[in-house]
Length: 330
Image (cartoon, rainbow, N blue to C red):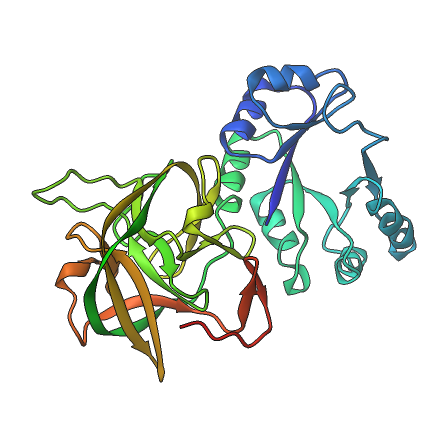
């Protein structure tokens, strides 16, 4: 996951607030100003009176040539290494990335940050933005903090929809208002997940709840940040999940609460290629999958031959982590 630090030097309250409101992972300030940041919001602070102390926990190093590389790599094993790069597109930074050194280059703009994140198609894991332009900082954070965990979305053809009796289903209430075309990827197997649509639709029975995804049964998998999956039953308030739209773009969301209740359930079976896939959801008009056009489709209206959106993943999962292993789930 990308980590975005912000350097504010000299002290500027407007920039600090912009960093906090934009979701910066940490802020670096002049010595003695750490507690002033803490008074404005809870965030990791690099300062003499902060969480990470310069010299002890974090070090700033200029990189001018390949001669600096070995020392920088040694230091990354002990401290947070912040790089001052006169020209941060130079070969030494590429070499550090190639050698898996976790460094934090200082950048001034969104464009510089995006380049740093894409060098050698691997990129750095974190950057530190240093600008005195609140507008530029806001722009950079708003774009860079979007999740980079998008996925390829494909079509599956419905084979059968049938009631299967009572079970425990999970509603995931997030701290995000979702739009038409957005929801969570959920399924019986980690290899194929259905795009279960958020409750954004007006209907005669209940008002829209765009923050909610009535996701499915307690055993089902869903995608979470860090390239992982988790069971719906494991989630709790404060955890993060990934929301996806019908084009596969991802967005992180914080869970506000989970509602697990006994409800009548239905099994949805579909095919993709030569394979058969399935998921289990509540048997109710308000639960919807997603059509290829990005429109919500009520599960009670689904019939054989209809197309819905899924994502397919090769390999398997072990404790939520993707592994290259043949696993059969039925």
